[in-house]
Length: 592
Image (cartoon, rainbow, N blue to C red; front, side):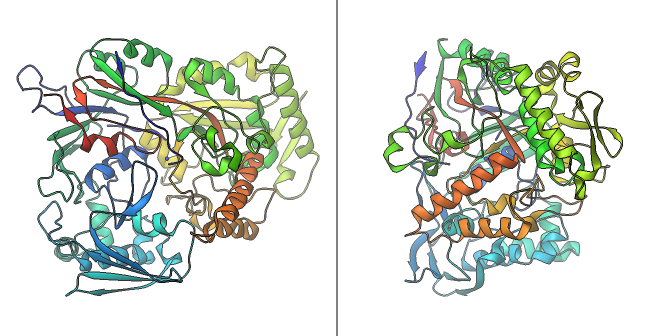
């Protein structure tokens, strides 16, 4: 078994999904046949601005790869291949990009400064966008945009300077073909936002691969784009195939798929690591498994209820069952690759499993016994202590919580119940963790419901017409190169039920901050100067992490040492925490 050694750099969202038949290696030469990547099911929202599944985002990376700027494999933000020249004013509020000549969209339409302005106008028309269920924060940053068609330049006048301005404005927005969209919208009697939403599963990009076919719930088929500005991929066809987690290992071993990505379970890693014919890369995941709690619905609207639930969640057992030796835990919205987690004299620990000085100040919701095992009695006692404290209050929503550990806790006069939902993959684990005997000791109920990913995600984000039912959602998160928590936690990102909320835990500060104070902290993080504000960013980011650790709108259940497992017929494939498979595959090739 060949191991590909990778270098973990500092920094970088969660998981991936999709489906199709096996590759036809028997009748097709190896160097010509499709490369098949196993994935979980995605939503099919391949244009940004609506739902934000990691699985959909992987397809976007292959189809677009970059906006005006991009994040490279070293964790740096740089000008993209679309940019011939960039000028930035001394006050950092005016950015001018001159585009390269010859750039084309996948449909053959020339990509010019007009398309850049069209794209940004598209997202800045928040009324038209929100009418389709979409959202954007561009208006928070951009004052105006002007273009010079003859010079093929676009100039952005910004309202403010922020620490993440390069990623928030210039690298995360993929560009649209103006002529195609305006013509199509006019023919169908739609706004351009309605048109894009209608055709959201048939994207037109300019990246290394173009969409060839999408079959919902089965697969995405992609073809190498011959006019790509960068090096045209050597692998001419990629199939991202929806594969059940229960069969993905067998499909890899049998050659029905060529790659499994982001694997953290020993039962899937160990059979492949030392097996001839396979290779792997590994790195500490920049993200992890989570349970998200809705903070404006029922009992989980109370801080103490969320904390109590965190204490009775046996995270060590979940890690043992799911990941074994490859699992690690954290106590907030961070990974071991985040540089602000560490002091300057701890930089050599970035990307390792070590616990630094700041991380050691955070509350762990796992009370362990002398042998390092989950202390069931102590964790339950701590949870009940918190619930008793909350039940003694009569102000606001606290008046709805009554009862005690002996007689049982009540919410609005009925037995307190936390309703958890997950995808079928997690059924055995969570039914074992919250078995009847254990739950009977808690003083409140735990109910478990499995849902297919798209249905669960719609309840998680609020993008459903079904009745609101669940409090907790088992999922995952992937972090970004330069974190701007405002993009996920701002209070104005909470929408009425029936519309998708980007703040999908509906958190507004809990008992630590008023909504206005919470938004101010998020603004303080965002508005740090991108050149001189490193220390201020670290200070405010740590305040954010401390609040999330205390309020637990999201419980970080586990992180892990990730493995990408693949056929050794693939070469020049290098993934890290910052550079996932969708970034690395266009640079890889079949062995000759």
